[in-house]
Length: 198
Image (cartoon, rainbow, N blue to C red):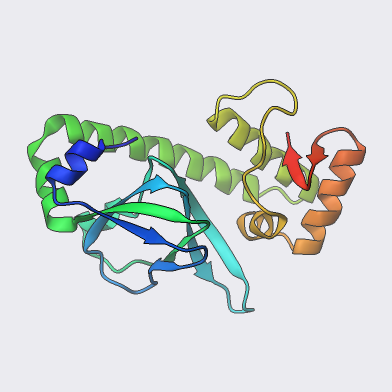
């Protein structure tokens, strides 16, 4: 968890609940709040011209999202959408910025968190530059598994649907489905009750 509940409540946090696919904020909206996921997952999305959705990032329980926009007041270039039933801490942006400016420990904590996010963003950009669909998915699975500190074969359940994998990897849904089946046949993944284990 980036910041404890105690700290967030001291800054005037409220806990908001969101249903699956409910919009938290939209592309073009000005940043007014600090958001931290208490329960669930949030995706940052951009609508493509062909009507599909690109997933630019995902934040899970304990993680914050879109916090850097509070420091330059530029409009969000994406939507934030609940991936499942979510509870999210929402702190008034000005109070959060004052807190970070005046507390060296919190600033360092935020820097470290953002450094890790930037690292994984570059790793994901490298993943997206791979032309072979199987190698692209394997690299994504490898990165996710390492992020969650899993090492045993088939010990990590991929936390995304095939549609979400399509949106993350910029592959067509049909390509993801076909590739995952091929990976299962080659014993690179296991499918249990429709879930992918790597």
